[in-house]
Length: 159
Image: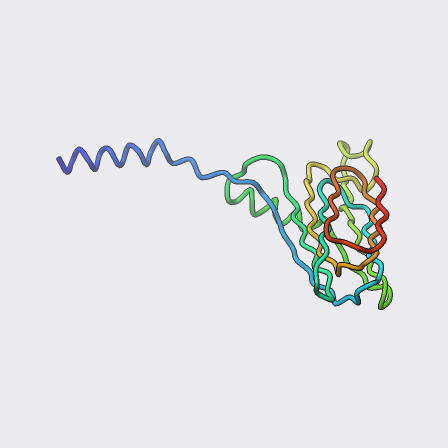
């Protein structure tokens, strides 16, 4: 009976050896001290943006970049490294103004010649931004969804 069990387990490992495939993604979080009542500008964002007011004198920016599809571990690591090339930068311009901008890497090669020089190719973006409740929020969004909750300051959003 032990021999039959061993052969059965060996057979399962041979046929079930396909590595687990998962989505490739890279997530970053940045915390910036910021006075309540200031203006927060978000420029060049795409896909899904969520801005939430909170009771802290900080802006927390969490960005998840992902590539659609399921990948093996080595592919995921390589793709996650490439996704980090999509830069989301927070720049404090003054005590009362914070600018968050998104920059996509340049793509080179014959296939990309017809695209604008900085185009996102196959990258899904998700922004979760927490701001002081009474902040003024100005969003210049390229495409996708924008959700703003618990913010009592002036809101300007264009897409």
